[in-house]
Length: 212
Image 1: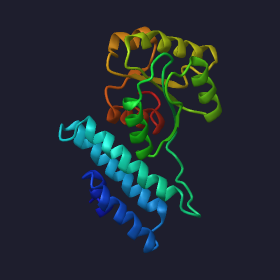
Image 2 (image 1 turned 45 degrees about the vertical axis):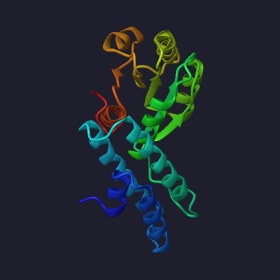
Image 3 (image 1 turned 60 degrees about the vertical axis):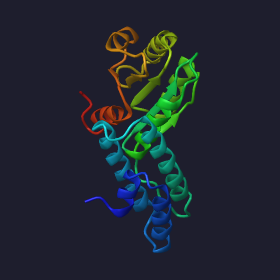
Image 4 (image 1 turned 30 degrees about the vertical axis):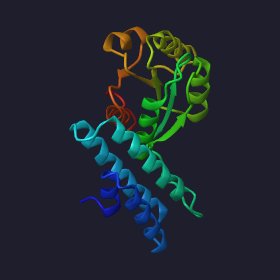
């Protein structure tokens, strides 16, 4: 059964989330435990989005509430961060500056317990390669909202291959105009239709089952 904090998070009750975080800290509850309860709430939010109860605007709001709570909890002295499930590099590819979809995926992945290296927007292929090498990422996520993003996505996958990172490092692509045909053209491993699917794919690839 979900905790009161997880439920408040899932209900998008920002004031209640802030109050419960403050009360929990005052009562000596560990920041790590409170953060885990916020993550449980994010999982519930993902399920509500999948069922059609929540919409994109709700995910954006959830991301803001979670980021505020996480920033407060991780700033607590003596907080030992939980070991992440894995490392994911995310960015909007070169020539595209749209970030709402990417930011939602980043927030949902962090809420699910992943370390996410967010490279921002207009990211060239070599930057993805550098970040994947430096972080030891198991997955690279490429976002793009423009049809002109397809070639930079393809170039990024080719750069990862040239650097010897493929196929060990999986590639997910996502964005409004992205289709299965685009996935094949780009050479990506999977197309993520929404943030919750991206979390499931990362769980499948980094959660012990690397063959999915």
